[in-house]
Amino acid sequence: MQINRRTFIQLTSAGMAGVSLSESTARADAVMRITQPFHGAVLNYRHGKKENGGLRIEVLGEAPLRDLVVVNNRPARREGSQFASSILLTDKETDITAVSEGSQGRLEHRVRVVWDKGSFPRYRFSIDDNSFFLRDIARKQYKSLFDCFYLDILRSLNQKYGARFVLNIYYTTEDGFEIPQFPDRYKSEWQDNADWLKLAFHAYANMPDRPYQHASASKLIGDLDLVAEQIHRFAGEAVYSPPTVIHWGMVQPAALKPLAERGVRALSGYFSRVDSGWDVNYLIDDDRSAYLARNDALMDFESGIVFSKVDIVCNNVPVEKIIPLLDPLSRHPDTAEIMDMFTHEQYFWPFYKNYIHDHGKRLEAAIRWATEKGYKPVFFHEGLLGNTA
Image (cartoon, rainbow, N blue to C red):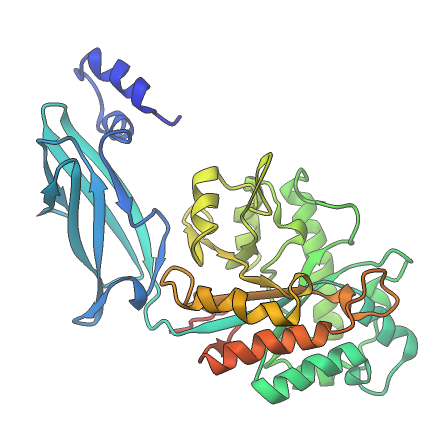
């Protein structure tokens, strides 16, 4: 239960006798809390100062006016109802505890943060809704995978910029093609290109929309296992990536731990504010969705999965607007370090009703920008959002 200010006043007016520390902490939320950093924040050198092999960051918050406040056992600076302190991060995860003592007794608030140690500017490129290229190759029996124009475009971007791609695939297409029909005779070619080209589960099929928003965890995991088995069969272990995007970015909270058990380390979404609330946000709460709307990443400690904010969906952005969209993100410490780039396969294909003739050029504009800005291509399932340090 979340305690608002009115509830807090009602509770404290009845006295604090017999109140446990956990109850006291819950009641403190309205008048004593750490406001920065956010619980689950993923912090890098842009958020503080490097010092003695660690990262020194500022801790800010608010507490009752006359209370003495300590942060991780060190007195905090006070100004009005605000407090400030600094701490040195030396571990991957750090608990920050602020305690105030005063007329209302002992009030406490805790957050935990993640240090992206050895962080570097990086980008990943994920492509959703893949099925057409597998059907095309299976039916036309090309000599090489890259005789398919779609894969050839991606290979050219790898050769020119070192770009890496994860293709999120379906089990079946709407006309009845299923990936067990895809031959394994290209397996060695998949393996030869596994350093830059991966395959991952996306959904069982493109339709219906939002297939896992209300589905059980067992349904999601069952579909994931079906696709993973086929990727291993026709492409091999080196090509398989645990999924980093589930179709429509909506799953039941109970599915997060099972996904983590299948190797999922990151999930990307839009974290968009819509009339009905937050969308494409994996159904996480409003506070965390609002944080991710303006920050690169957030750790969910219960599952161990890091949520990532998609920065660009290339099929939605004309070539001339790509740099104006990305440039401001590269100048803000909360969005500059990690670029989560994204598009959808279907817009490459001339038979698709919403075909985009310059789709490949849009990808190249985004990747060229990232390369010229010093961003390195990574896979999100490796290390912490591509940081294996």
